[in-house]
Length: 495
Image 1 (cartoon, helix red, strand yellow):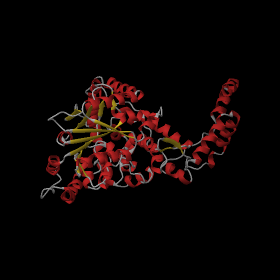
Image 2 (image 1 turned 30 degrees about the vertical axis):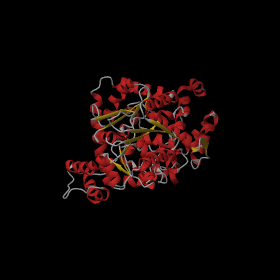
Image 3 (image 1 turned 120 degrees about the horizontal axis):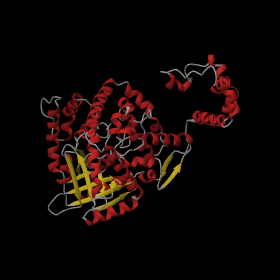
Image 4 (image 1 turned 120 degrees about the vertical axis):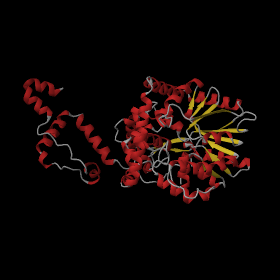
């Protein structure tokens, strides 16, 4: 399994298979509707939600504008607190750094806190290639790992699985990874959680190396923050002798006080809680308390390229709450696997093509994986205008020059496909800049309206297969205006 799933089919093909799976659709519909309703209730409790949302946006935008300064400050703060900072330009460099750090300890096993950054770079697979086994400790990530599966949701990676499927996975696979599932395990949530707790406890107590991501990094103090709901993160962050954190460079905030905003908006937008049950913070190392050695790997992997795009950079505000997934009608029907990335749903549709470029078929299709209904923007706690970025990325794909990275260079490649769309846009531009030609075309279209098809031919059937084409009026607006307004109509029509 690849952390970025490159090589998967384009979104329309993958989604077509997903929407024909009634079990998957049922699981997704039940889960997203439940989370959505709880989130709405939790947000409604906060009288200044709009102000918090705007504050989060402003903090993130300010940080991104001065990212170089705050990253340098963060490195100084972490180093002063006893940690070591490593810089990784891409996934390969990050994986090499982490593998070397683990091998230096002499260990062959690590426990992991749920981390999308490590999934993004395919860290588990890279460690396995080096003879190191990584154990996921988040319940949903454990289900995905045992099931040889892929995550399909930012917050609930196993959202596509129901209780019966989870029970079968535990019964079948736990023995191969450590402590087997209890005899007679049922699909009762309490029994499934207890089976996972017993299975993981021995790994927590044995592991000498822990690997995490971070929800936030504070430049002012060098503090890293992980918020979670199960307590597995607290175990991974405090029990091992060595802690390695892989974090995207955009996760930084300037000051300790800035956390106040996000520790209110993140839990309500993600788990619909007033606060997370476990909020773990650590600053470097302390004698006799927690890991003896701390390493921070700061990951770029396309983020600097994204930052250079004035429209697309707002995707870097994302705090990974998953609220946009839970309201998206496309995600609800297609599921997360169709996006071909660890970042599914609306945020994945704008983040993945920027981090990876739009050279591949899957990445070129992601900006179109949306109805542009705007629900994702309405619920985003940092006000990312996802529809705006989707349209922006569609323009990039259609106009040509999808962006890929070659080393430290950004290279524009010739566009593939979309020739008919480009030709149509050129024809429309020609007509709209020539009023006389436009008027003749409108009259011709009205007089031949009886001959017009109700559906589009060829590839257009995908759009018109379930809807009729809009009918052309019997009379163009300009002719109607002139007929009903006489001389005044001529003046109005000439404008």
